[in-house]
Length: 231
Ligand code: HEM
Image 1 (cartoon, rainbow, N blue to C red):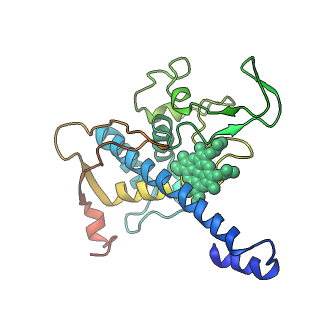
Image 2: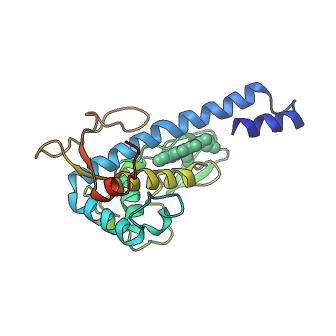
Image 3: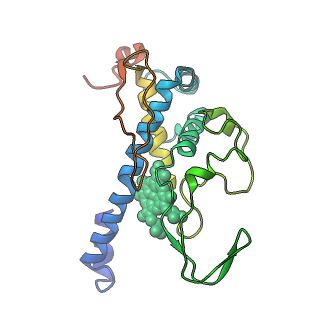
């Protein structure tokens, strides 16, 4: 990415200044680091508390994948249950629960209310995505609820929407699928004890897990047999 920006700098030095490049790189790191690690942690925590869901992800991977190689990016779109696990994780624990503050550039109406130009708007995504008027058993982890794609509406917006929506949504979904899929493909996972993983949410710009996740894993038979992970 930096190489690409530096080659653009050679063509248009007055626009692609060092400062602009530093700014782009910084915003990508800030916007793309915590969001990803937090989502993975919540997804694994939910999976550990729902062993039947891990079983389903595993069965899906074993059905669609040869046993002698690890998942790659192209395999991820074939794994619809895994995608539903990710969507359900982002519904319950949106890493940016209020989106980024927006400001109305013109006077407008939202939900029948007059909003003056220049008003700051925070979207409470966390509440929308757990709204009992929209979701059945809203606080429960049910990846199957996403099997039927609902058309239209704004009940799921973990990446925001419109012009200022997340430009990393595509890569985020791919990387989340690849990492979670590979973890389930390669290892048997269990909670550290009979006790459920603590799901208390912390405070902050994103929703961190108060207790850092711990789990127990051991390589699966196929992982050892085909030396899928370097020892
Ligand atoms: C699970 C992962 C992620 C989630 C849930 C997420 C979510 C969001 C949300 C909600 C916004 C604000 C949208 C709005 O206000 O309407 C945003 C903005 C942004 N995201 Fe992401 N994001 C994720 C990963 C990433 C990654 C991996 C990158 C880059 C590699 C990235 C880059 C950005 C940037 C640059 C913006 C600012 C866009 C702008 O202001 O125009 N995000 N993201």
